[in-house]
Length: 277
Ligand code: C2E
Ligand code: CA
Ligand code: CA
Ligand code: CA
Image 1 (cartoon, helix red, strand yellow):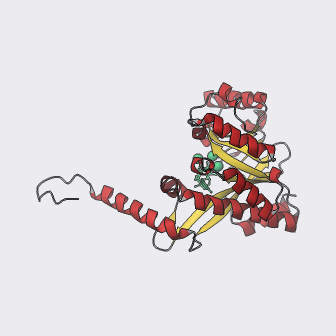
Image 2 (cartoon, protein in one colour):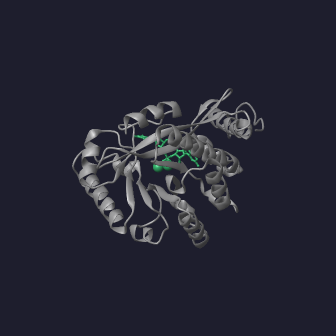
Image 3 (cartoon, helix red, strand yellow):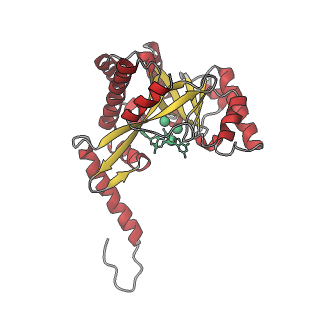
């Protein structure tokens, strides 16, 4: 920023400068984060509504950097996407989640699902299908236990090639889940044409369903329609018992949220698996 003189108003506020420098720094640190083993995964349980049993776990990425401290994925994932670093990070996440699953399977006969978030950038890379195959082979987990969470914006461009790729993954048994449903563009009728197995109803829908009202009505008709299309439903961001009660009556298949379980490190998950059997 040029020095514009003592009395002129600087174009950048101090805050903007700091924000800019922080971003540059995040980018710099992100490039070495894998090598320095700064990532770890937490796992958040998903429960079947009918049985109360564990459906599976969603792997959620955490980054702790010695100079930046804890950085939220909400902050660093977009930067990793823009810079392309997400491809390497995403590969690490997939491999780590699958090998962790293998351990749970061997030690506790766990046979639920492991859900992994996949960024559009990763899916658009040429060899994504082969990467998934390779990691399934390496770790030896059943393809049917792996669920890939994708988002609606993936379909905005390259609709046909994206569908083709997802169909190839489904053909080998991998499950596809549509994340954050309700925050994007797609209409309910459009959903029918997408190669997906599961739909995660965004927390913005769930938030205001603790009390009777129009929000409950909207959310329950969404669940009803999604069920009619034949997709499995997961409610995200469930935070209170009234919401569970509502979702139970709305026939939502699964719940995930702080109420039923926060994201936890792998060793604590072992305890939940043993208890939840
Ligand atoms: P998401 O995939 O929608 O993940 C759910 C987020 O909601 C997680 O935030 C989770 O901790 C949080 N959450 C769970 N239950 C509740 C609840 O009851 N109430 C509220 N308010 N929040 C709840 P987190 O871990 O900070 O992740 C944020 C986002 O970062 C994720 O949103 C996802 O889009 C992205 N992300 C996380 N890990 C990965 C990853 O490995 N790869 C990619 N590509 N993206 C990731
Ligand atoms: Ca997700
Ligand atoms: Ca989500
Ligand atoms: Ca999200």
